[in-house]
Image (cartoon, rainbow, N blue to C red):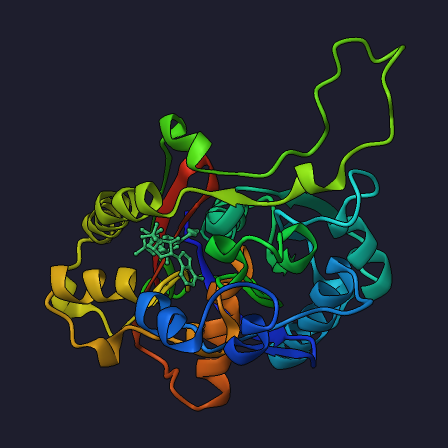
Length: 329
Ligand code: COA
């Protein structure tokens, strides 16, 4: 039987117009541009005003399909990753499916900031086992809706945006997703969390005037940095090992854009120049699962992606989940 791989055939992205700069954040919380840039590398982020997560995802998806040169009726599956969904039901993927005019399987997947890595693995698995030929992965987030703009420890980090990619089955053995690795360390769950539904001692007698601030993202920054220090190298090592490759084979690392200091650690560990680690968090902040496809689309638009390149994508975040995959263009 012929080997089937999942080839990246289209990339798209969308960010809302409104830009929240570090100077503007100084008006909201006790912070300053110098602190934010030095500790995180972030200078500005985009914020969705009056737009839902699915709308961002839909726009990114349209662009990815256009870039792939296919219409939505060719899709066998749509996977949407988000930790900032509009609804529990309908799922984001079904909403976007309808707007695109696709007739196929649709699912949402939430592994927080590593969502795109997990969804790419799921898409690849469906393609490799022959159950799907063409899969659209959309990662869309409106983190501004779960951000506490009185908490300077988190609000300076987060932004909104969406990215999407199309994977298609190919018999070219040297193209597509070569390997994936996904994992989780639930012992660190408390360091990064958002409550979805309030715990009620007696739902029949509960006061349903829910305090909205309970939904806000809460994070203990230092333990998350410590987690990334071992989890990200573990994920990259495993993905490279499974692909039979070395760090020297990598053309680009496209990491989740959380903090410039974390990306520095990756560069040092693998002896890679920072020029091989794609960074755009200075302009978008941390957009959770959207950050990797958003970065990929920016690279595409800048003409930085070429056939034959080997790219490692790595994601990490709430859960605490982490993972990486190797893809050959
Ligand atoms: N502006 C100014 N001062 C701030 C601040 C801000 N926005 N946020 C925190 N501080 C202060 C703290 O209150 C603290 O003050 P104190 O020493 O008087 O108590 C000081 O800066 C140091 O705080 P600390 O939390 O130790 O800073 P840090 O060096 O760990 O940097 C983060 C904070 C959030 C930038 C860092 O922990 C981080 O990047 N964590 C990982 C974030 C991440 O990647 N999350 C998502 C994973 S998907």
